[in-house]
Image 1 (cartoon, chains in turn purple, red):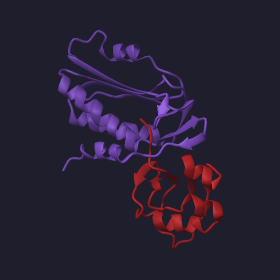
Image 2 (cartoon, one colour):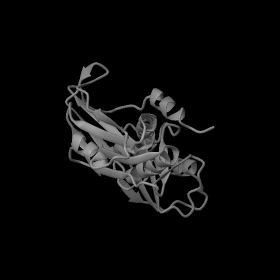
Image 3 (cartoon, rainbow over the protein chains, first blue to last red):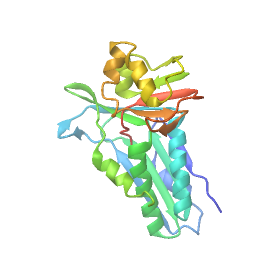
Image 4 (spheres, one colour):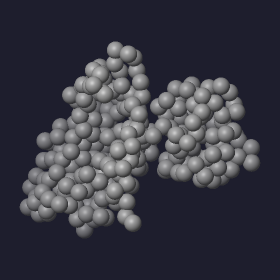
Length: 155
Length: 83
């Protein structure tokens, strides 16, 4: 049976516990749930920041995340998958992104969650701008994120 | 065709989207970047390092040699920093 991922691109916050419960409540076939939450740090390169503002490409953001969700479902035996990505202004300590994977066994759940996060970082059309005492500046992409995504490529 | 700009590409160009009618010899994303760069200083600044710029055709990532014929919507943006 092929499962359908829940994908949400939203400005508002999300409740991690509620999202986990939504996938696993009342199920006896799920043996493992992995959740990854990306949270806004209060510093960037050891400089304090006031907030991040996330810009996104509406339509393509959903399509790109769906494409990777479908790939994760094809590669790992998942019984549930939820991906939520916020946009707009996000203060330190607030949630940015959530990936929840559910499977019979932990390995698939861990691997699929890591695969999805590595790809979201490099392929989902979102851009972070930081606000600090020095003003606003766009955060630069990091090459180690590209390396992290590249290791999932099938040879 | 509609062209959209995001993040610092949008800021440098000075607009989020516009409709353009490039001539027929503008065949690829590379060609379109070169053509847009000749439209003014703002564009030249946005596309001063064309290798850094990422592109999408009809909301799917493409390489810079992708052919633009038939595209409804082309987007230009910096490397992504979401997640």
